[in-house]
Every structure is written in structure tokens, then in C-alpha cells.
Length: 224
Image (cartoon, rainbow, N blue to C red):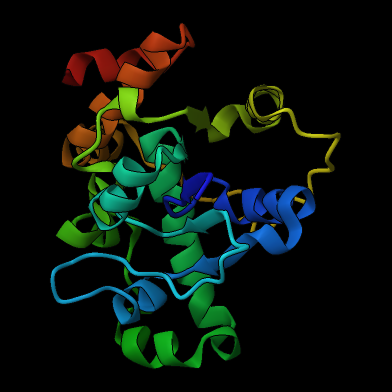
């Protein structure tokens, strides 16, 4: 195994997968969804992918602890992308709400969640399962474990950095699964509440931005 790409929801992972396909072709795995991982994870919590020997790049919604054994035993290059935590929540919420406008895209999810169709942003964000998602996916790893951590807010420039590090040929960026610009942005009180609910994600994001000497919203300093 050469590369494992951890796709945290709403951080550009679908677009990244399309780019990985351009570069690696049949060497790239399918894009693993959480339901795939549940089906292919043993009772011991170890992910055992059903891949052929030629597959050398894994991509999907992995929690680090599920692929830790692969990473540590194969010397795999580990990559992931982060996003401003509030922007990520807004994008995830509007992606969730789009389900009710287009139930045909995922009938099972629609049936499972149709009682939530009128859920507001703050009601959605108050749910524990919607909080600190980036921290959840990367729990068990330290930043030094990663070959590359990209920032979705700087996707094009960071993609060039990754391409240089991996010696890729020129690739096109076919933006995928893009959520339309959200309306009804949070007010100051709501913004502070969103940050406090996701303080682990904020700390992770700020740590990476500081190490890369990139700017981040000053308001985050007040919550660290």
C-alpha cells in the first residue's frame, strides 16, 4: 500500500478522489463510504479491504484507528484535508438539507431522516454526532503521522503542493459534490456556539494552520 487518503466529509474529498483516479487509475480503490467500512471491518475494529494486489491507493471515509494497522505496518503515506470548522459544518448541513429536495438520490437516507426535514442549522449542529467530526476521523493519530494535510479553503494551491510532493503529472480539477453557497449564515451568538460545540476541531484546525504559517479567523483564538 502506497497511499491512504482519509476523506473527512465536506473537505473536498470527492474532488480529490476524481484527481487520484486521473493519476493512479486502476491502482486506486473504490471510494469507501461509512457503510462499506462497516461491512469490511472485523469485530476487532480492523479494516480489511477486499482489494486486489494491484490496488496501492486507498481513499474513503476512514477513521484513523480503522486503518492504523495498515499505516503502521506498510509505511503508507497518509494524507487528509481539513476545513475551517464552521464552514465545514455549514456545508455538511446544507448537504444534509439537499437530501429532502432530492430524495431520489439516496432513498434509504431519506426514509431514515425525513422526520428531520425541518431541522434548523443550530438544531442539526447541536447533535453530538454532528460535532468535532474532523477530530473524530483523525483520533489516534498525531500530525507527524501524516505525509500531507491539505486545507480545503486553499484547495487549488494545496493540490499543487501535494502534486509536487508525489511527483504527479499535470492534472485537471473537476470540482465534485460542491454544496451551493449557504444562505442564512449564523449570527455572532450562533457562531460562538458553533465554535464551542466544535472546540476539538477548532484546536486541530488552528494547530495545522499555525504549523503551516497560514492565517485563520482571529475569533478562534478566544476559544483556545
